[in-house]
Length: 154
Figure (cartoon, rainbow, N blue to C red):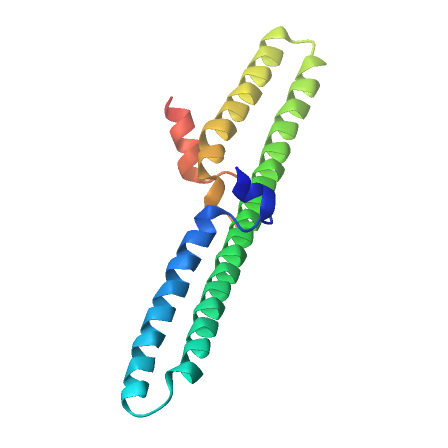
């Protein structure tokens, strides 16, 4: 828990571990090239600082990439939830409006039939639309024929 106290919220262990591995990998690869350069006559003290800088920059770039990916995924999940809320609101509101109008009917048989149809419509929306939350990029205000025919067969 000390990790969360000293570092910002976006710098979590899940994101810092790959960054640390990437930084160390870059460091050791760069160090291997430095050894080759030192055999060719380039002084080692001039290249070790560059090796450290390359490792740190690689780790920072990976943290930036993982953080950007995390925020993008959160945005897409929020967008999916908003789309689902819009769809559910549309379908349930239409069904409730139909129930409201059916309540004003004098014929008891017709009133019960319309209320039953509206309840079945709400059930179909909840069973067919909700599991497909990630498959739509915009609200679907009409259910597909496949979904309608499946609910009629019940």
